[in-house]
Image 1: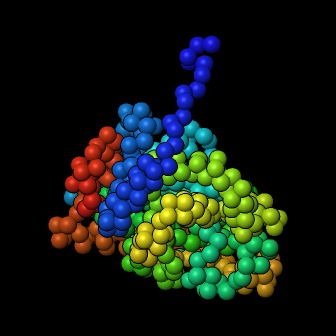
Image 2: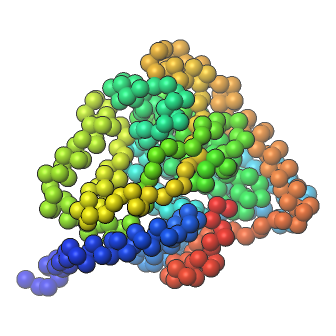
Length: 402
């Protein structure tokens, strides 16, 4: 047997060393502001082996983004905004999916993790130029969110036994390219595009359920790009405390250790979480969430760490696009699907979105232009691949939340 025919030996797990490294990592994260934590997770993501290996190919995606010809030319830029024809491109091919993910990592300050369960990747493009305006990902909805659940008025049986949670989704990614976002309120455009007929039709075809509502959250409380959008209602802020998550290089060894040394607990925890989320209630493609949080709690317990010591106090804004007048009644199982009445603005789709957004975009751009506050720069993190954390912080911290 040749040496290349054998798998390299896994590094031995040293409990005390791994515990110390985990605590050091958590202490480091706990001292950061929310903006620093967000950027740090992005920096870690950009140093992944696949990003470094494919840096030159990823760099070629820069030209896929839309930008005005000359942002300082008022008349020309207004004309180009008026001529934009936004549409959604559903990403299904594996190669296109990889490209979508690389672009998502390049243009979004938040790190990207594909959640278990349903995942729909979407590009928002300009039909005329074929250029990218933004990206969307829709995922299995979160099982519990107090302000959303109170607004809808549903209960656990509605959500799980009756499968109504499968009629809603959470937009885990809503991001626009820059300079479209800052100068033209591009985030509002992309957010509204989550509700167009093409997205609703895809949900029905792929999962067999009518999409009733699209939810999303913002990282910085209730003041965000979703304010003032006619499609989304601000429900309030998220409740409860969320644990800080260690870097994967510290989390994964512990995850594997639990699987091997606490196998009975591990299997029970996974099974119970699936049952809680409706997997054993006849919901074939129901949400799966909270498993990592539960595993993290057990890791802390094994290390003798108080989980409450590593909660972040950042509350997220919670928003919901309820596309039917009587959508809450349907989600509470008070009416049948045939009785649903769609709101007119959602029926109109892109036509309504264009009318509303272009007026706002031009007003915003004209104001920034007159005040000399335009930001023409793209946000594309290609140079951050291979960059040190201190360099990353120095260059990009001010861009967090842009």
